[in-house]
Amino acid sequence: MNTKLRMPQNIVFMRHTETERNAGHDAARKGDNRLFKKAIHTPTTETRLSRRGETQARKIGMNLRAAGWRPGIIITSGLARTGQVAELLGLDDVTIISDERMNERRHGVSDDMTHHEMFVYVKKHNLWRYKLDAYNFRFPGGGESYADVRARLRAPVRDICRLPQETVLVIGHSQTLRVIVHQILGSISDDDFARGLNRGSLAIENGECFHYRRRKRGPGFDLAHRWMPEREPNYGPNNGFAKAI
Image 1 (tube, rainbow, N blue to C red):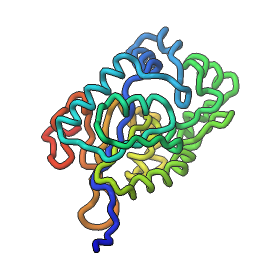
Image 2: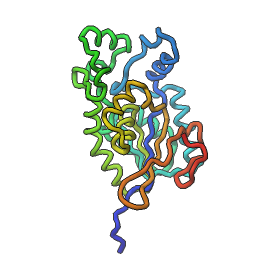
Image 3: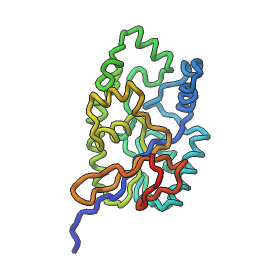
Image 4: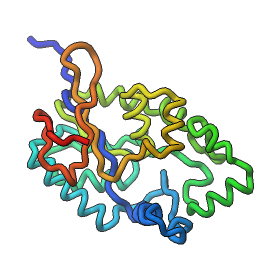
C-alpha cells in the first residue's frame, strides 16, 4: 500500500477581479482627482463584482479550461467577491471552500472611508507615521498591520500547501496576496516590503495569478509563473509560457 502523503503539485493564488468599488479607485488612479476623493477604501467591507469584473471572471475561467487547468479545490476568503469569482469561473466538479482566515487586511476606522475622508482623518489625528512605518502601522479600531497579516496567514497557507488535491486555486485579495507572495512564499525582508509599499512596486492587479509548483527535491514551492490569464490564455499547469510576466 502506498502510504506517501499526497500534496498539491500546483497552487495558483489569484486576486479577485474588478469590484464595483475598486473600479472607481482604479479610474481615480488614472488622474481624476475628483474621483480619487470619492473612491471608497474597501478592504473588508462587502462589495460585489462590477459588470467588467464578472466578464473578467468568465473569461479567465474559459482561458483556464482551455489551457488544461482543472483544480480539485478552490479556496476563497470569507468575503463575497471572491466567492462570486469562484462561481463565475465555471470550473466543473470542483469543491469551493470559504476560509475567513484568508480575508483582506482589516483597516479599522478607515475601512469604509473615501480616500479623501481617510486623508482628513490621518491629518486630524497626526497619523503620518503610517508612511514612515508602513509595515507595522495599524489604523485604530481593530486595524491590522502587514506584520499582523503575515502572522495570521501562516496557518491557512500551511494548510493549503498540505491539501491532497493535485491542483489548488486560491482566490484572495490584493494586500493579503502581497504578504503571501513576497514574504510567506517569498523572501522579501520587512524593510524591503515597506519600501516596496511606499514605492508602489508591490501592486497586484485584478485577476492576476501566481502559479507555484512543488519542488522536485526538498520541501516547499517555487514561483513558476506570474501571469494575467485574461490576457494570456495559453499558459497551462504543465507547460511553460514563452511570455510570462
